[in-house]
Each structure stands twice: as structure tokens, then as C-alpha cells.
Amino acid sequence: MQNRIKDLRTIYDLTQDELAERLEVSRQTIISLEKGRYNPSIMLAYKISKVFMCRIEDVFIFEEEEKNG
Amino acid sequence: MQNRIKDLRTIYDLTQDELAERLEVSRQTIISLEKGRYNPSIMLAYKISKVFMCRIEDVFIFEEEEKNG
DNA sequence: ATTAAATGTAAAATTAACTTTACGTAAAGG
DNA sequence: CCTTTACGTAAAGTTAATTTTACATTTAAT
Image (cartoon, rainbow over all chains, first blue to last red; front, side, top):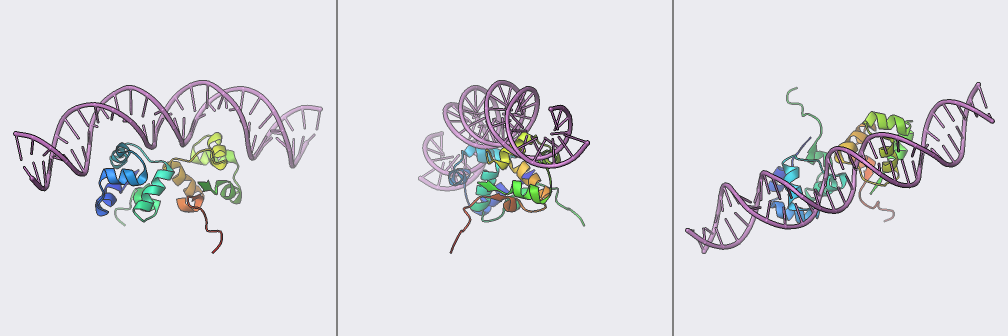
């Protein structure tokens, strides 16, 4: 499973620390999520999607994206 | 956090066992989720939404629903 | 060169998700 | 009555998420 956390964080101009604070998790959690070391709980996934003002499915990519059509 | 798993499972006419099998989790996991004993991982939440052919946000209710106004 | 901010790694500890096993109850059908 | 099916509880065990602490690296500014 992939995610767009790092990209979105950059777009929103947030540091890992700032994002961690907003989500009320540790910075390690942000790093691990960005690095794909593990998958978040649904609550954390939801909170992340709220910070980035989108849906969970917009942050987390479950399926292989169709590359060509 | 609330969820509509039990309702959706009934609508789709699935037993806890059948749903568990489809999701590749134990029946205990289904019971615990339906009873709200804990929250699923995002992967499990995603799989559940797929079984019920909807979005994660349609199965899991994160915010308090607006009751009036 | 030094400081500070941001990012990263590593590892041990804690918490939460999930499994496994065993047992209890209620409804439906033989 | 007896069996089967579906749902439920309880508790112990395993795995994965998350925290905490400590330290290393890079980049930008002084």
C-alpha cells in the first residue's frame, strides 16, 4: 500500500514535526508512515485526510494504479 | 467512532463467518468490530468497504452526525 | 566553523489490533 | 430431545502500530 503523505505534507508546507503535532502522534510515526514501514490505524488515516482536506482514498493508494489504458 | 458493518452485513445477507472468510480475518475480529471494541487497520477498513462496494467513509463514521439544524 | 532546523536510523518499550481456543446462548429443524 | 447454525463472551497469545529515547546526516544561516 502506498501513500501520498510526504507529497501532501510538502504541498501544505508542513514539517514532520508540525504534522505530528497536528495529528497528535510522534514524529517517528510520520517518518514510518512516509517511509511505508507500516500502515496507520483507520483513525490516524482519517485524521491525516482531514489535515489535507481530502478523503482517505486520496491519501492512501490501495490498488495498483492503472498505468495505461 | 461508529461503523455500519453489522447493518451492511445484514443488507448483504452475510453471516459473521462468511464476512470473516471474505476478509481473511477471524470471526472474533468481526464481532469485535461490530461491537466497537476496537478500530480496524486501514487495510482491513479498505477490504470491508470493498466487500460492501462503497467507500471507507460510508462504512465508518468518524464525526458526530448532525442530528438537527 | 558553528548553530539550528529538518530529516533520518535504530532499538527497546508500550499499546492496540488480531488470532486462537473454549465455552455459553438462542433459534430452527430433524 | 438433539443437532446445527449464528451470535456472543472471555482470556491468553501473537503481531503490528505507535512511543520514547538517543544519535547521525543534511541544509541553511550566522
